[in-house]
Length: 399
Image 1 (cartoon, rainbow, N blue to C red):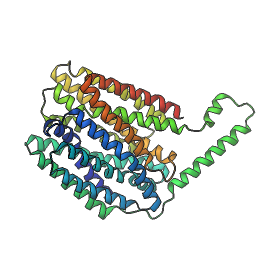
Image 2: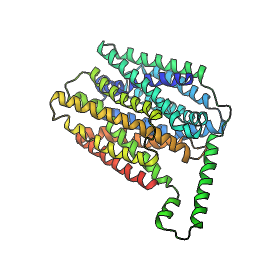
Image 3: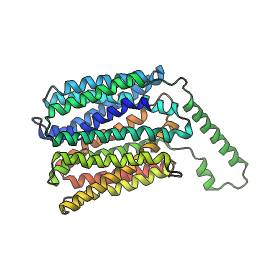
Image 4: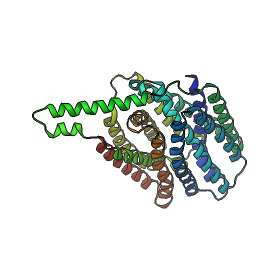
């Protein structure tokens, strides 16, 4: 568990920044608005996509995973410090893009480390444990943001707090993260899948009466459909969440500190889900569960439409229910997708999952604010719902 320490502090820093940055850009920085923030977030995510492939390829090529984690946390810390020294919107955008490029460097090696540390049957438990503790760090970051905003701490000080937390993440990872002694678990899983496919084929050939249902079982998985589903799911999520802090400020008479609390409840829903996964015997497995989650989220993202027309208490209660429920089901989605990706994505392409999700997130970061500013937040929520439905259809075609 000690190796998680650096990742937890990294999440604390970015949990604080997740709500602070869009509000900082739209309310404090000169010439900053929601569209500008959307352009910055989208450009940063798009720029990080090819680097996700690069970091994933390099870490597997060199078999040196901890070096990329150290590099990621060290450079992000330095860039955050430089970020805190300027209020020019162009420089802030450029720095944020560089932060995104080096932040994704820790993700592919982290996934490989978990896959090689745990046996295949325990992958879900390993990913759930990682996600639970780091999401708890995200909650702490949001809570810290709420406390600092409530105390009226200056924006420059809040940025320096995030720099300090990022520095701790680098020091902790440098001390505790180690490369696995042997790298073989994913290779064994690939062999197991090949043997299983041959066995199913032999069983099929031995049958006298082969029906359509038997042929469907033997049909290979549609990796393209899975990739499209991952992009659409990330796009829908990003379209919904990117403008959401500004939506709450404009549609509810609440202070910035309360926005941190609302997003904190979303993360608490994730934490509860992550901690339940290893203990919940017989929880839904694989792509069928992912289908249900995509369908459920397509309905949940429509509910904030009623926030603006509800009484204050009802609007707050509805916001709490939506964010908590979305966080809870996302925990199951995240673990199932991480585990599934380690099974179906070939070795040497560990950055593919990060790149796919980054592609969807980048489009959503731009689309969400643009739709919200041009047509209204309600249309943003409807577009997000439609994208979740399309991801549901894509996941259905995967297997």
